Image (cartoon, rainbow, N blue to C red; front, top):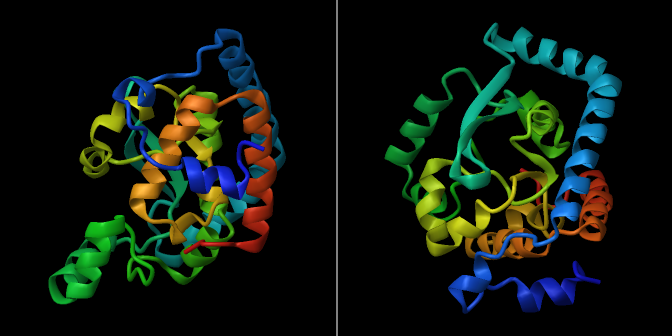
Length: 231
């Protein structure tokens, strides 16, 4: 299997050839089929989960009265940016909290510089922590899928600060739509180092097929159930 642990361990390294790292999926019919599946699944899930989405957004708003929807600019296919939607999992003063922590905590500075994430993030609320661990905060990204900005399966959407860390592999990342889920999410998620995450993104951009799409979705459901690497 393409996504077997052995394959990921042996293959999840940046390709030696720059040209190899930039190859998008070559089958146009395959890409069209995946897009059709994206639209059908996103439309169906938005209808089915709209009561859950409304309940969660109401609970978030009840915490502090601020907007329950968070929109953050990310890079997508072709290097174009878009607003990636999430249910807000952070406090209203999240930026100020992060700035205070990074000024006073060298260990947190190093972790942020290395992974662009914090295991003990002071910005995340108690409800937000639950939403993240259950991956419920990402439900609004179904809208991004319908709009053609994202896919269900693809590289994780990145922010401007992460582009330089992709280096020459950023162009490979831009060859497909970023995904709600991908190889990184089913292989340990936040327990995976950043360099390996970049390699996984490149691998998925080059190898995305219907079979891989389906396998990633199935394994994502299992990963969400076990909450492996989620924080």
